[in-house]
Length: 479
Image 1: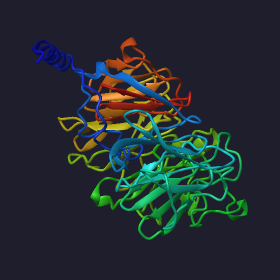
Image 2: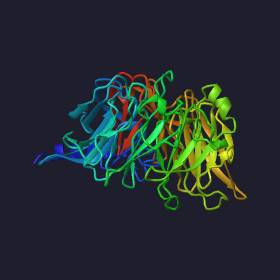
Image 3: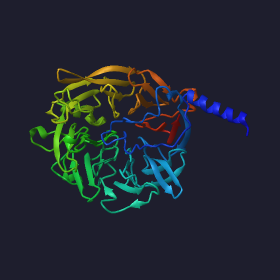
Image 4: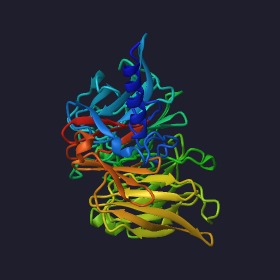
């Protein structure tokens, strides 16, 4: 027995552990929907693999190409039975061309892909069934499809393929799909330039019964997909934020969902049915509009093309010491973060606070509760990443600034006290409490960086970081 070689091997292993270097291992957790959970927190709760002590050792492991840009974030199922002897973590992502990709998360190897045909693009993202056996995928053919997670075989029936528009040439599947409480949620908006007589709406499918409900942002008294422009005289009010439909995580709210709408007519204040530039709360089954919020300057927003819906409502953790324990944050193109009471959204002008970020918000903010029970909100913008805390004094809750990092960021995520956010050319990691940069994919030791970004954003799962970019690639980093 060669004791010298054994001693050398042990020394090598110990040295690696001391240096904080971990041999890459397959992911052991899921990231099943955009921003990890149905409430779109962007928080990898319980995932402590990457830490402030070892994050500097993240290094690129592989790069894989797509047929077009995937303008969003992937999802991940940690254990997919690909064959009798092969179980792997699998990434799923949609490209603008309407192709759904399944890649081995450890190697980048293509497992399967399915392509839809249509006249335009999508920036939506897939969602995984809680069973892990099915993937719900958007496309460019006006439908959401159901694919077997392991093989990509399409399943039909029970509402699938789910039609979400009769006008795919003017109505875009822009936001991420969502799954919660036995329902699938999809939304529509318009394309760049707001052309055509489109109407933002939410389509909800009961995954057990196949029953479908529709809520239209304009002509909300019509509760089916609008087939022709003549059915509704109004146009726009698209639902296009990255988060799409956001599910309330508090049991008291019965699983209701929230969406925000873009420019369009608002006349509900006079008893009408149009909800442009508004936050809509909808029953879990998608059948009933239960509450609304509209900024008091809605006409100004409409006239200036200043969409409220550039960001989706953010669910904040319950604050027992607050007079309004269940709150949400809504950001828009005007750069304002509006603190809202989820129990009563406030109708017209009923926000609890306006916080001016001084830059339009086109991202999905992330929410983190630290070990002291403090709630943090991280917001990415074109020129910065900003950290805010929710502070309650005398029963009144407000957002207060903590730090700003002077580097742009798309939708940030939080894992183990680290904020990850991407900008063109790099993924950057910050200490969540201080804003100090602790790692960047642009540094030489990272082994290569990403290209330009639009709405692409990262995910982090058990020591692995995944990120797509405008070059049509997806990159994987691990410790």
